[in-house]
Amino acid sequence: MFTGIVQGAAQVVAIDEKERFRTHTLQMPSNQLDGLKPGASVAHNGCCLTVTKVAGDLISFDLMQETLRITNLGELAVGDPVNIERAARFGEEIGGHAMSGHIIAMAEVIRIEQSPNNYRIWFRVPEHLSKYIFTKGYIGIDGISLTIGEVDGTVFDVNLIPETLNRTNIGTRGPGDYVNIEVDPQTQAIVDTVERVLAKQLSEQ
Image 1 (cartoon, rainbow, N blue to C red):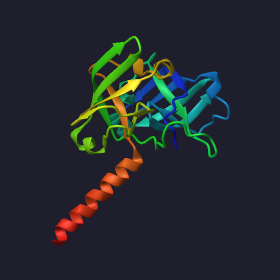
Image 2: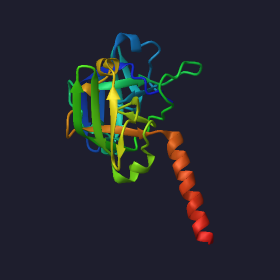
Image 3: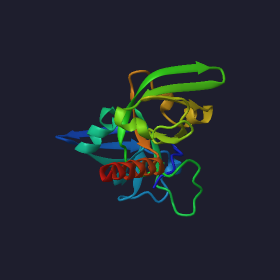
Image 4: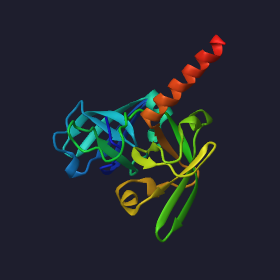
């Protein structure tokens, strides 16, 4: 499990590309290395990956074809920053919201508005996800736990504080870029349950 509180951005330093498979290596910040070993889980832009090799501060991960297809990790190049979060430990504070690290789709950045005291980004999600997007609801964007602002069909916005911009890679995103999306699991469960109940009631009429 993850919390959506990104612990920093790590740089991609190597990519080993194979058919329908790739291994990439990150240079992890020193404060994220304690106890890190093969088999550990680390979220990359919100996507849960497993450590396959540790060589000092160089940490490698394997990416299967489905991960490359569903997420923006397949677009990474050497030198790109990646939002990272190590798996939450029982008893630790959850400052964001509970996240699984399972990316459901990508959303397109369509507009950015900057002012001296505010940074606002608009995204467009695939239509089938719009039913899970609510004003004041939670959403995971490239692994960052954020609160949804305005919603208009498949378009929604978020407001970002300076700390989020400093700690993560979201400030590097521009119109036309794609971010990984994880909808709030509780919201998804409620919406899906209500849909099933209503469908059953209609079928019994």
